[in-house]
Length: 102
Image (cartoon, rainbow, N blue to C red; front, side, top):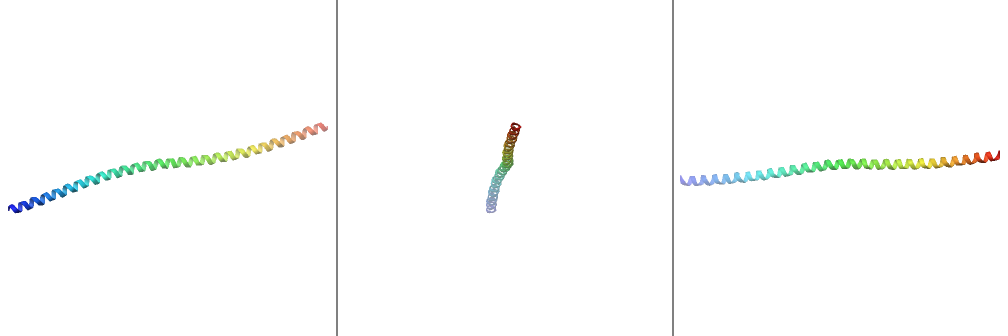
């Protein structure tokens, strides 16, 4: 009977050691899950910030394109104004020349 008790005690001790190892492994896995979840959440926040920055960059690029378009339109308008000024100057000179002839 004593031998049976010793064998049973050894089995119980082995069982308790395995349970303890499993408990430690579960705690380790739990810590890993928490770390991965935190890292995932941080990555999602960073991704959101990058998306916002990407949207801001797209808006900024659109703004630059709009500015360039406006600058081109301004340049075209300035060229047209210069051409109109030259035409007005030509008409004025012609009018002066006609009045001097009369």
